[in-house]
Amino acid sequence: VASVPVFENVIVFKDLFPKAIYKLSRLEATDIQKGIPDYKTRVFYISGPEPMVQATEKMLKGIGVSRSRINRDYFPGYL
Image 1 (cartoon, helix red, strand yellow):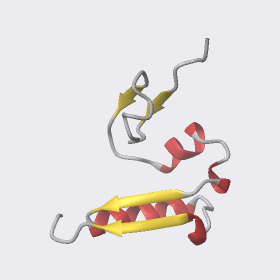
Image 2 (cartoon, one colour; image 1 turned 30 degrees about the vertical axis):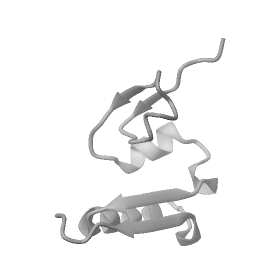
Image 3 (tube, one colour; image 1 turned 135 degrees about the vertical axis):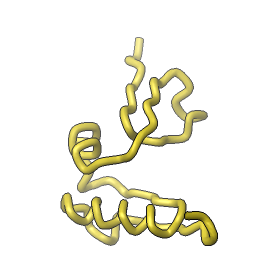
Image 4 (cartoon, one colour; image 1 turned 60 degrees about the horizontal axis):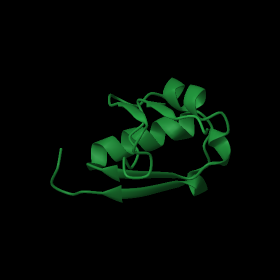
């Protein structure tokens, strides 16, 4: 039996992991580092209000994620 993943502070598509446990809150650098040990080899997709996208991109770059692994999408008009 495969284990059920637990995602803390990481927003994911619930359809992909219907049995996962979700805790939604602000995403911090330590959440990425603890929850995704190989995070520097992953591709990140950030979508939302521009200030949130910019802050998340800055945080990812701050922990060593290459700009080429960060994809951004803004929702103009939302703060």
